[in-house]
Image (cartoon, rainbow, N blue to C red; front, side, top):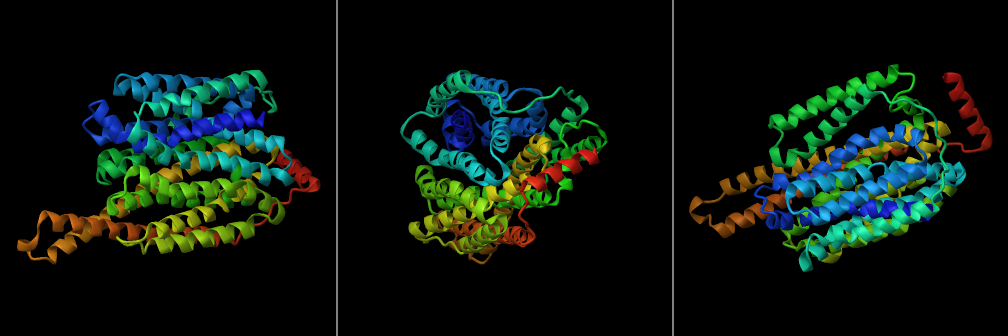
Length: 484
């Protein structure tokens, strides 16, 4: 049963990152003039996910896991088919957003089944396998997409997903059983509206920064609207007897700490996955496919390490793993700030892979330790909160780091051009200066990213292993009942 769930989740997670490399080809094929338009294929997907993930706690409690998985995979399959045959951009975007609606609940659903299916003292190993799916699938997307776009047609990115999605759906109908308890619960529609507007606006605002800039009213207007809506959403949740998203999970100190470390780690990871390809393609002139292949060893390292770190977590706890992992991430991120125009391929690949090795030691152990402190009935809310804050952190981190990179690059280019004799400035000289200025921006951004990882490293020293003995769990459940 878990194999069916893993297979379905792998298919949907892989789909998340397949399209980024293919956007220029889609622009040409569908006669789209602006990159900001085609970027909606990624932005729209993220928006739908950001809206639905906070609602996942209610869905997990209201519907059986069998019904939820089959419905989600059916929606995802329909969206994939629509996108594969779409004759124009509007229908392609529609298919893409339907895909997102089916995929959004997949991660919280699988994580909750893992939490229920395994005792707390063995969760590290189980969540390590989940990490293998959650981390490796999106990381395989860019190199696979680069190869397909270079040698085939971008529609194959959707066409190849269809048979796997159908197989996953048929296996689920045949073998999937219900293991998660359900209960009668009513949905609070004002909370749904506030959640949708809040997280949707926040994600849209920050994801639009790279195209529109911070001074655009679209950017700061939607960010302000998002923040105000989220504040109203939080205040409403604290007053409701049955909140849409139970924020009492933050009363548990290890969950709160793990959530904070995960936020910082997600921002650092997603920014690195954007800035490193920017260096490879824009500074070094490496093709999208080759840059994707250069990042593949890092994805493989994370895939291999996820189950191993799960076992190490069960044995040693989260503190030593998070301190070691974040130390590696901090050192390698700082070393990336010294990348040069002529840095060797081996050096780039090695440094990126070691950085991903460090990240793999942090993500699932820290998250699992936080979830271990929650009573069982708060698991759906804990996973929904974790997935939501990580998605928002990834979007915000990426937007902020790309803005820092571009701002520094523009400033550096102006300084370098001002130092030259105007008579000597040719197109070739201008191109070289832009290349060096972008490198300066990338180096500066990695320095800032280093400072971010240092924050997470300091926080990891306060991590404590949650007591998962039967006596401790019974006490925890009793205290939760008393609090209610």
